[in-house]
Image (cartoon, rainbow, N blue to C red; front, side, top):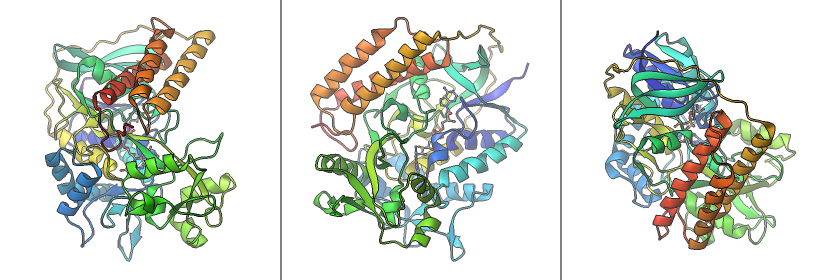
Length: 489
Ligand SMILES: Cc1cc2nc3c(=O)[nH]c(=O)nc-3n(C[C@H](O)[C@H](O)[C@H](O)COP(=O)(O)OP(=O)(O)OC[C@H]3O[C@@H](n4cnc5c(N)ncnc54)[C@H](O)[C@@H]3O)c2cc1C
């Protein structure tokens, strides 16, 4: 039976780049992902990846902007490390063939909120899709990487603080797969919230698995809400990238009146948490829009092809119409505590990307620093040596069970109620009362079906969401004062 040196859970930028780097070292890699390789938050990224590229930029300036946005709650040494490696990280993507947008034969750079200079490299408005496609192409060609799609990581196999493999559900069967190293790159918890920019895969499985295994987590109260998701009732949440504001878009009421200067001197380009709360407040007076009608249609079509086309399909022409927007849950600044090489408190368990807490984001992530973080630490994680596990590979043939329709209905109801609770009570503005209310609601939901049927993927995801929600709520209750994304009224 095949033995693996490393199992990687997740096929976003973090998981796929780590897989490639381990494979280059001749390690046998198993890459598992719950849907297809390209279903990830990475694929959805629009704006770009931050890095020190421009002549007028410097490591010090990028570090400073990251710390200011993060309310100085960041781990400074980690920020410094990430930024120092940013140029090489972007070069890595160029070497792999990511077709970054160019201007006068050099990489074009865009502006996003709270960056003091233009430092975001991008591929029009589909940077994540371009990165994901490029990595997928390479991963599929690498002989040392075995890809297992539609394989759901159900649990980490851990004994006495040592991780020695992963239990997965694949083709309706449980399997235990052993390896010397396990890399958790399973992304964020966005689906915990009723309104989110995250795709359906983001059900906090990685975080919940790590919590069950005894991993230390930190800063989970800092859930970042993106200020500007498209707000059309009945239509799916769709991000309107920060670079639309970076390239001159204003936030306005239906009357065309701007309001951001009342909240911050940087106006529309204030840090994300401030813009989010400003919109949340202004929505009490009426709907909020982005106005970029002062830019030429040809420019908008070229610079924002995805957004332009998507809006057009809903009957909105961004060159002549206002774009209705509202905040949505977007990113988790906290996660599983990992050092600069991804090491957690569990031996042989490494965590990278959005699921990890490296301390770089502090209380509020600087825009476009997350792809950078995931990429930088997916490089350093491969410095860990893989010792073969003493456990032998076991293939369990235990089958998952089909969920009866009635129970499925109940499970979906629990998920809906949980997401609603998190949105209203552990959302953009929190109070001691809403947090207490959330605590009661989550407890009630946990008791709605006991025991929760976890011998299937839907049940496992909901269990994971309940665990993650509970842990985020507890973290939010512990932090009594407002800081960054955690705002207590
Ligand atoms: C709409 C949107 C726009 C964004 N724009 C930007 C941007 O412009 N710049 C920027 O820096 N950041 C941006 N971000 C954030 C950034 O995309 C993510 O933080 C980053 O891509 C995370 O990468 P990752 O590899 O850690 O996780 P992901 O890309 O989310 O990948 C996680 C992987 O784990 C898999 N997985 C999850 N659970 C399991 C399980 N139980 N079993 C098996 N597999 C599992 C998933 O299927 C997925 O393949 C954006 C995010 C969104 C949602």
